[in-house]
Amino acid sequence: MKLDILAIGVHPDDVELGCSGTIINELKLGKRVGILDLTQGELGTRGTIETRYTEAAAAAKILGVEMRENLKMRDGFFRNDEEHQLKLIKAIRKYQPEVVLANVLNDRHPDHGRAGHLIADACFLSGLVKIETTDDKQNPQLRWRPKQILHYIQDWYHEPDLLIDISDVFEQRMKAVEAYSTQFYSSASGEEGVQTYISTPDFLDSVIARARMLGKRIGVKFAEGFITEKKIGIRNIDSLVLVET
Ligand SMILES: [Zn+2]
Image (cartoon, helix red, strand yellow):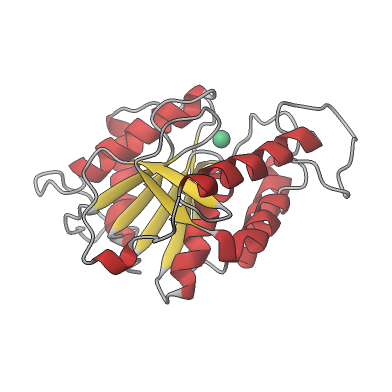
């Protein structure tokens, strides 16, 4: 299945928090978008593997993505090494995305930065013809290198290289985030169980505030921010948000 965009997150919910507005935007333009979770988030304080699968499926449905797959790496203990790179290369070659949306390269949760580097390395290595891999039916896979990797900003603030206007789809984006009712505050999960850094109403408020603050930088209501290692090229001036700021 060839995709235009593959959004990769180390924990189910990383993609929703980091770049789901951008995903909805692209789906509305008719692009084929999928989500790849690297781990099952099994070390999360709240919820279980089962509830996180249910929530991830519900969020995927709200977004309307083509596919969501989980590579079942070990939460907290996966490495950026040959074994994990090859696993990810197989997935990249399977879906052949033009653009990869990836975890950030340095963040509060060490998994995020390690995953960001793992994804960047695997995207590069996937383009090398002498790295041989096979698909699920043992057929050899073709080399594939995504043309651009955009690292979505997560918990720690980083100055973005690219800001994408998500004002029109912000409500749908927050619905996808709120699908993770064991992780984030919602009327259903309320104040039950052990509270964490992300389970209080304050955390969701901060998610909204971040999008609002990034939006303000480009003169729109809400935006998502990305960091890129390569330069961004655009085809024409029309792609620019032209608002006086
Ligand atoms: Zn995470």
